[in-house]
Amino acid sequence: MIAKYLVPAVAVLGSAAAQSSQCTQSTATIASPADATQLATACKTFNGAIYVSNAAQGTVDFSGLNQVKGDFIAEHNGRLTGLSSSTLNSITGQFRLTNLTGLSSLSFTSLNSVGSISWTSLNALDSLTFGTPGIEKAKSVVISDTFLSSLAGIDVTTLEDLDINNNHRLSIWDSSLTNLTNTMNFLANGNNFTVSLDQLTWIANMTVNNVTSFSVPALQTVNGSASFGSNQFASFSAPNLTSTTSGNINFVGNPKLTNVTFPQLTKLGGALLIANNTALETVDGFPKLKTVGGAIKLRGNFSDVEFPALNDVKGAFDISSTSDISAACDTFQKLAPSKQGGDGRIQGVYHCESNNAQANSDTGGNTSTSGTTGGSGSSGDKGNSAAGVAFNAAMLGLAVVGGLVALL
Ligand SMILES: *[C@@H]1O[C@H](CO)[C@@H](O)[C@H](O)[C@H]1NC(C)=O
Ligand SMILES: *[C@@H]1O[C@H](CO)[C@@H](O)[C@H](O)[C@H]1NC(C)=O
Ligand SMILES: *[C@@H]1O[C@H](CO)[C@@H](O)[C@H](O)[C@H]1NC(C)=O
Ligand SMILES: *[C@@H]1O[C@H](CO)[C@@H](O)[C@H](O)[C@H]1NC(C)=O
Ligand SMILES: *[C@@H]1O[C@H](CO)[C@@H](O)[C@H](O)[C@H]1NC(C)=O
Ligand SMILES: *[C@@H]1O[C@H](CO)[C@@H](O)[C@H](O)[C@H]1NC(C)=O
Ligand SMILES: *[C@@H]1O[C@H](CO)[C@@H](O)[C@H](O)[C@H]1NC(C)=O
Ligand SMILES: *[C@@H]1O[C@H](CO)[C@@H](O)[C@H](O)[C@H]1NC(C)=O
Ligand SMILES: *[C@@H]1O[C@H](CO)[C@@H](O)[C@H](O)[C@H]1NC(C)=O
Ligand SMILES: *[C@@H]1O[C@H](CO)[C@@H](O)[C@H](O)[C@H]1NC(C)=O
Ligand SMILES: *[C@@H]1O[C@H](CO)[C@@H](O)[C@H](O)[C@H]1NC(C)=O
Image (cartoon, rainbow, N blue to C red; front, side, top):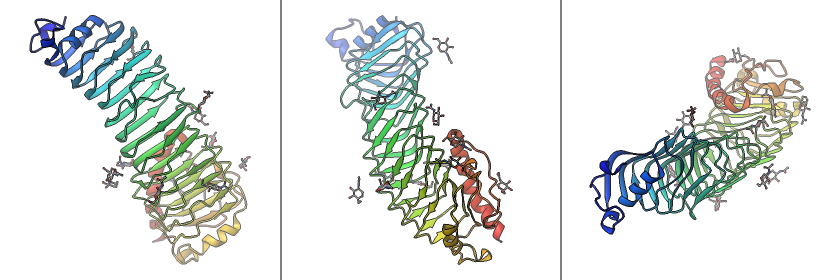
């Protein structure tokens, strides 16, 4: 029984008077469907946390309750099969569901606003029963290790953090996100996940792995780094992206990628790393790229490389291909530091190499400091796609310093 914790004490449960109640309590522990019914009948607004304990079984319904000013938590319970409320509109704190292996129904048809969503290890949850549009307001959304095939019902436009990982059945997400201020991750959601962020204009950091298609037609600003690894898409374009503030852009180990285009990108705050995308034969998608705050490192099977507007590269310029790129190397040589015979538009070490059979095995952020053309100075570390991208991106940033030092 929980009534004894509720303030004001509700004498006549379910009466109109009781229904207008505000209830206040640090935590209400719900150990059965009856506890939930009692709370939801007594309280319209609950000031405090609601904790569904691991004693609760079956479906626990909170219809009647409108608002939780606090967290709503259920965790480590294999016997809970459903959680629902047709009236709950807002949860100001966390909506946290963790390790509920029997949960197959999540039905909150009026829920519109939550502080944050954190749903992890919900292995039986194959769909959400939310309203239309569903949740429109949240600060952060983390959905990990579920059986969901759709995220319909989550329709937020601004977020601080988004992390969608290890949901192997996800197939499509058409999101109306416009602005994401911290981190966006899509990782290991199977190989059949199509993501369309048609309204997204502003992001900070993002990591996109194992998606079939990724579309950001309106993206204008990347105020951090963007990394793409192990994806199944053949083409990526950021038609409206004009600059990145300080971060890197990385494409590593995307086996089907044939076409990368950033037609409006003029300034890249950090580094550019394109490596081990074995189907990519042409790197000509940066027609306006002028200024690069970090290094440019390319490794792959490409036979054609063009950076026609390149004017200022603060870090190294380090290219190596399995193919013959000697014509491109002749062009870029003119931009090399004066010590290497160029006009100095590249400030770090210049290195350009054809016919390197090992070109695809160097996917790390380390750039060559050998300073030779056609030499074998392309050692690099052996960082791998998924986890490696972020780590190696950091090294690529450091390589700027290394490159400058090597020239002094
Ligand atoms: C998950 O919950 C079950 C109870 O259903 C518990 O036995 C198990 O230890 C929990 N797993 C973790 C990783 O906490
Ligand atoms: C992949 O997703 C599409 C929808 O985008 C779906 O029709 C198809 O069944 C999915 N394929 C697999 C293998 O899951
Ligand atoms: C996105 O958020 C950032 C950081 O809060 C802000 O500077 C920027 O103006 C926002 N952009 C849009 C389009 O709302
Ligand atoms: C983006 O990532 C970089 C490197 O990890 C970090 O320094 C920076 O603070 C991040 N930016 C945001 C807005 O999270
Ligand atoms: C991600 O893609 C890689 C490379 O294609 C593949 O080996 C891996 O199994 C994928 N992971 C998931 C979770 O789909
Ligand atoms: C791209 O930017 C232009 C100019 O700012 C704008 O008119 C256009 O609508 C944008 N495209 C998309 C898909 O948002
Ligand atoms: C953009 O990134 C820079 C560098 O990481 C940071 O100082 C700045 O606060 C960010 N801007 C916004 C609006 O988040
Ligand atoms: C590459 O993609 C861009 C943008 O989607 C497109 O305009 C261009 O035609 C594509 N190039 C090739 C060779 O497919
Ligand atoms: C890429 O180059 C490697 C090494 O030369 C070669 O084994 C592989 O077949 C090439 N892949 C493609 C798609 O051309
Ligand atoms: C290159 O990418 C392929 C998948 O496309 C992957 O199997 C291989 O391990 C990657 N090589 C390195 C050195 O990361
Ligand atoms: C980067 O490469 C250089 C030369 O190829 C090597 O001396 C250095 O140890 C490497 N750094 C890292 C962190 O792997």
